[in-house]
Image 1 (cartoon, rainbow, N blue to C red):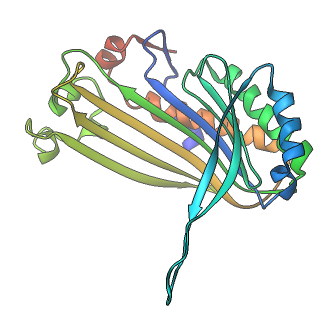
Image 2: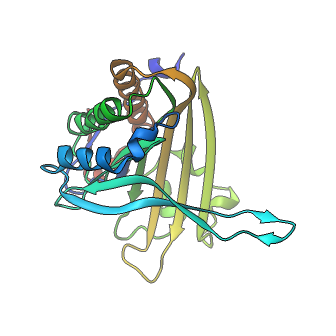
Length: 259
């Protein structure tokens, strides 16, 4: 059975949505026009209605070590960034990459048009013919009052995440765990990280993180329709990862429903 054929429920959450960050990013060969201040100003005007806040640019600091000693650090601006008024959405566009990030995910039908907006701006002003990486990342943070130890989570999350009850990972003295994996899905790959962290001085006193990144790399033709279709496939895979992560009681306590 392929990953596409696996059947897992699609989960919906209300005000307590554990999805904290969603990021879509595309990388492409250097498009020098996107470093032109005049073109950057044009992009800023195009985004002004929805993303009026000019944020600090992404900067990259590099230095080299030579026989004569380290060279002075060199700082380069790699992307201009604009945010919405609510502070929940950020668009970044640079000569070699562009992204859309939100901390208030309201559904794929709301998220995808913002990704398309970024792709159109890059196409119009940078005219790339290829993309070298396309990625979609979801970061979920699960928190519940009264759930403190790793064993508390065992009654809420799938046993495939936490392991057998006799495992050392389930010892009540455990304060942190991390599990990582990488799946190859044809031309795509999925990297996932699950982590439990005890925070006894805070409330809730623990957090369980499900961090999933799906991407493809290589020399791929720049075709916005094909890119959007691929993003849609990644989104479908994300729902499968999340849908297989919960026991019914855990889903209920987090305020979610299965569809």
